[in-house]
Amino acid sequence: MATADAPLSANVGRRVVGARIGVGAEKTHLPRTQIALFVGLAVGIVFFILAGLSYSGSLTFQLRAGEGVGLNPMLDFLVFGMLAIFAPYGFLKSAEERRVERIEDRLPDFLRDVAEAGRFGMTLPDAIVVASHGRYGLLTDEIKKMASQIEWGVPVATALRLFQERVPTPLVKRVVSIVTRANEAGGNVADVLTMVAHDTREVQLQVKARQISMLTYVTVIYIAFFVFLVTIYIMAAIFLPQMIVAGQGISSSSLGASGAVTLQFGYVPILFVAFLVAVIVHAVGDGIMAGVLYNGRIAEGMQHATIMLVSGWAIMRFVVPVLNT
Image (cartoon, rainbow, N blue to C red; front, side):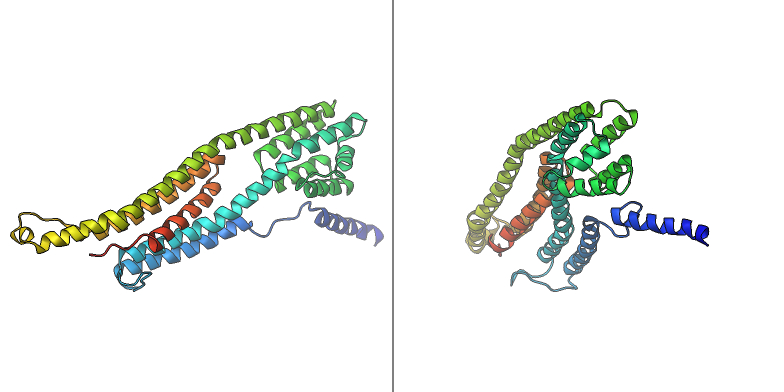
């Protein structure tokens, strides 16, 4: 019985240790960003259906009294649908990426500390455990998890792989790959860690320099967008109302009655819808382009598109006067 129960006890012990250190544990839940994307898509589809019903006249919804049903309410529901898709995923994904960036900022410091511990004759696992007592900002928790796994007997290659899975960025993947290969090959791992730390810091400085240079273009995009909104406001508040007044005056005069001079001022309200469509297109396109220019990520673009879309839609619907004939 003792020999039969021994393998079972060993397996149970390994499962308990694995559950505690996170080895072999299967992920049974979706990331928050994917949940936000799926929920946003579902809510967005609902708003798109409401937009179609509003356009067909089946749904009588008026955000502004007197503007009637049709294009304006339809565009409102389209904006709500796009916001439901862009906002949750964009902000959550951007926050997650900023957290990963803050973790990566301290990665070279950790590599240098591990290299210094290795110069005193420590093996790589022992050097990681010693370096885990330092402070590395948000990276500290991940380092402590890796050190705990090593102390529980997990091979250093497995612990590094699990660290890579928790922080799945190209920079971390490259560092883990180099360190793992250097440790397997033997030799002076400390020199390899020092070079990797230096190279990692150089890559981070290049990324930050690129973001600083691209920030100017992002600012120009925002300025151009809000200048476009100001131009629309001036036209809707001053220029187009004068066209309506002039057209009404001509139509009631003898020139209008005889047909000698005509001014189709009845099409002026359609320009308001065209302006609103242009603002929506510019907000989505310019916002995504701003995010891609800044750090090359669509999620950052969704965040900028949300800010522009909310600002542009609110100004068009609550600040710019309605054009009625």
